[in-house]
Image (cartoon, helix red, strand yellow):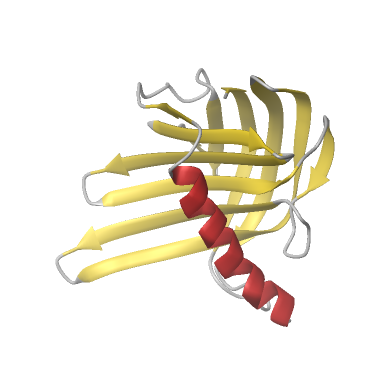
Length: 161
């Protein structure tokens, strides 16, 4: 139990580090056609900003969309040394989160959906890029899964570092 609780802050710290490093593509790819795309509970999504890096065998994939009063973000971070299949769970070394933030007149409402089950498949990995797929089931309550959930499906990436 303690491990899951402590892992969330560590993942959040990794997300902040990734946000300041790696490539930064602000051209706004179209959903399904860009270097990163996915479906969130059935709706297509692609980030307008990418932050990606592979250094010291740590793969970091970050994508964000900043809208009028809203922010959506995907982060996948962890040790990936070669192409292969990596689990995305609360206890795996590679972790994934989806977050949604809405700013209203009554305040800020942030939800973080941590991967409880899923898979990252890295098909290609070189010093200059990575290609693969991912999917996971995320939940706001990492202790028992009783919170709100999101299904992240049909995730694809074809990244340049």
